[in-house]
Image (cartoon, rainbow, N blue to C red; front, side):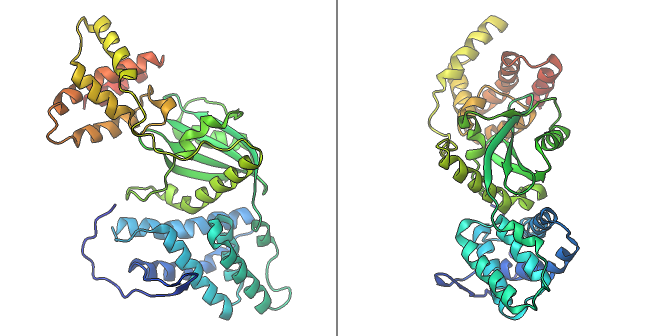
Length: 373
């Protein structure tokens, strides 16, 4: 979590939520004010998709600001609830077109728990407006559902996952998941169709992967494993999709449960791996390749660290991003007696994995060079 720089605390509001008064972190006030002041920007939207995206970006800008400023109390779920409470107050006095659009934009990306409050606010704005003065098209964002049709893609290294899911409103949603370390959603977006989403993902991550229909939802453990915990280094793309991605994931899971093909259960992938699963074949490869056996204790420590937290079917995958992740993790071993040896062994470990996966030689050599830094 980001560390506070000791800025002067602001006075906390205590607006009413369902459970009564709640004391909010000091940054909520300014962020909510900025968002409400930015609602008029939604008036340029001409379609429901534009409105949804503009709403995501309006919220994402403030989330990025509070991360950059390293504020304390980064509870983004509570912040969304506070924002909904504030616009509910506005709905009593300002039944404007901008607020009408904003409420529908929020409704499209909100968690189920705050949907009743948003619907109540929408009803109030509608009742308080002049007949025919509000746009009709935002109403199409009220009942978004997943169809249950899903496609997946992986990058050449196997540590990036694209999940493309179809929804009831025109288009598909792309979940861009980084499985280099702990699974994290790094981007998302709405596209016209599967091919357009796939092309956008390939443009960002390279390669020539083609989307394939998902018939076994067990392959989506990387998506189901996303925690949506605030780390502090999230990109603007991730923050624009912070709420929408969680909502779309819940929509998808609800539909798949009805089909009796649910997503894998959300779980941590720590403490369920046997280091010998990787340590033994690596030692055998090392003996064949270099004519000697590596220190078993160092290999076991490296294997245990490498396997901990990774999506199981990616444990034998290596990529530049994954290497950087573990360079940082191993660097934090501090006074661990095997830290220098593990760092020295990492290039060979990466070479083994790259060759095992059949990656082209230039990619393998690039990873080895990264692991040597």
